[in-house]
Amino acid sequence: MGGFTIIKSMIFKSSFQSMTLQSIPLLFRITMSLTSHLKPGQPLHSWFEKNSNHALLDQLCYEHNSLLSRWKVDYPGEVNFPLVGMAMTYAVRDMIKPLKESIEGTVAWHGIQFLGLQSEARCFLEHPEKAILYVLLGLFDSVGRGRLDKFETLFGTPPKGNLLPVVKTESLFTLDTYSRLMQRTIQDVHTNLAKVKTLIRLHPEVFSNPSNYYVNPTFENSFLVGGADAQMIVNQTLIDIRTTCKRRPFTKENFYQQIAYVLLGHQSKITHLTWMYTRQQCLFSYEVENLFDVFRKQKSFQDLAESLYFDEADEDEYYG
Image (cartoon, rainbow, N blue to C red):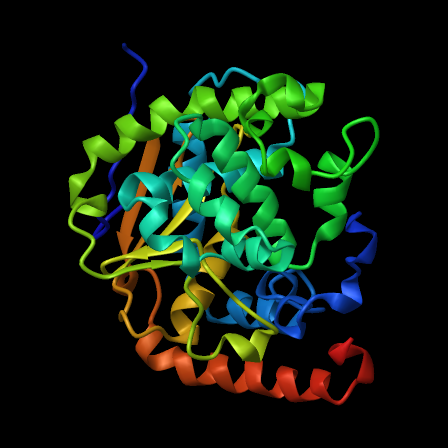
């Protein structure tokens, strides 16, 4: 791909009863997120369709999918795939900078605060059973976003009961505490941790010396799309961590989302985009200026987003 920096690593050799949606702070009760705005048929999606270089975008999709489709990924069976993905995001964060130093910047911390588990969190962040820790942080992330249904479905149903007593005791780190589905989910996270460690070690140019490091970064104009937070920014690189079994996982909507973050503006002045595939141990990195003309098109994007924001703000249901 001319003019792109492409990095690839192929390692084949070797009583929640009182908690209701209404009780969650408005900040985390968003009816329309950036992801929703980028679905086909939405105005921002149409804007990207009009303003993107589709020959380049087709080549980008081919670059990712042709490489990833060649690799055999062992299917983990019955696991909670979204939760595995979120857990791996927290794992990568922990490997870049210990979570005990950065946890308060995450959405999971908002969930922990909502559940009143701050003191317990300080303890279990030190525990060596990392796979269980990362899965729990993924669940707390759901709480922080107002998705109590996911949390209660996994841990609040009989015979397991309320999670709070579990979190407050050593049984938090006993695998048989959890359901069969959760045991498999935790095991899948555990299996992928070694792969991620290797991938990070192989790419110090991306992950080392994070002088500017943001977890769950929001953007100067996130409010215009009903809320937008990315996974992380390391120095001036926006990183998207993907834990997928799909043979051809990359879509133009994945591209639109990362470029949208850049267009919303961030104090770090993002210069690079990186997509990291944990199961495949593969990483792609590109200079933003070779992907999209941010300088010329940022105002047009923000003007459209602003018009959509004020249209939605006129609707009473937007405020819950």
